[in-house]
Length: 113
Image 1 (cartoon, rainbow, N blue to C red):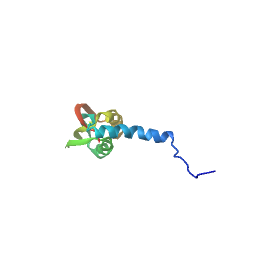
Image 2 (image 1 turned 30 degrees about the vertical axis):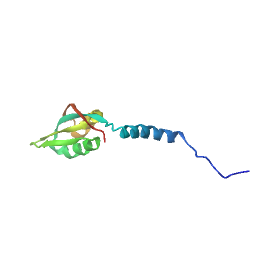
Image 3 (image 1 turned 90 degrees about the vertical axis):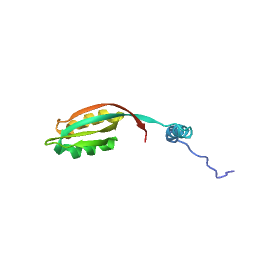
Image 4 (image 1 turned 120 degrees about the vertical axis):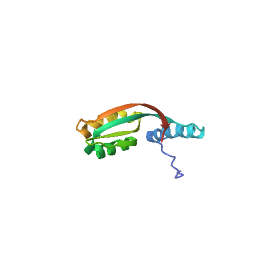
């Protein structure tokens, strides 16, 4: 005799998806806030490379607090998540013909978005 009932079928992917959600919900319910470290940066780039540089850094979470134009060089200041500092450093030489100057330092934490 058959009932026509088919039990739910779980896959490993179902559990992997929950692994991230369950702790996140528990932390949210507990009122816990999660922060990530940020770096402040100063950057000097050739003025003609500025649009490409800002377009590459923005998706990495960079925020720009000051842009100082010069005759041939622009200076930028801002913040970026610490986890993206090395990627930004690796990206800059290709965008600036190797003419960028980059300084960064730890600058506290901000809420994780």
